[in-house]
Image 1: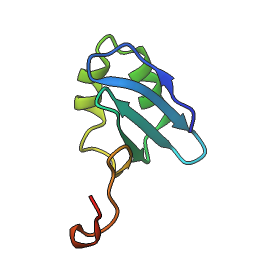
Image 2 (image 1 turned 180 degrees about the vertical axis):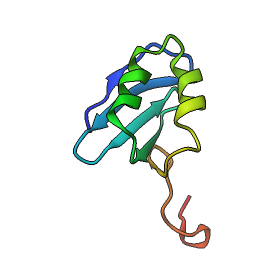
Image 3 (image 1 turned 120 degrees about the horizontal axis):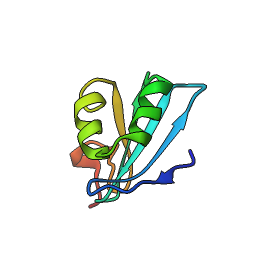
Length: 83
C-alpha cells in the first residue's frame, strides 16, 4: 500500500485502500499497523486534522480491528523465534 508522509510527532505516514477500507499507519518509531473497516471519511478527516496523533488516538486507536506489520513484527511463537 502506498503511504504519504504526514507532519506529526507520532505518525510518519498514512495510506488508505478504499476497496478494502484498510488504513495503514506508520509511526515515527517505524512500526506499521493496518486498521480494517475504516470509513474513507475517517481517513480524510485524519489527513486534514491539525493534530494527526490526537485524531488517531481519539478516532482510530482501539476502535477498529488491526494487525501489526512491518518492522519488528513477529508472527512466530516466542519459542520459535531466532531473535
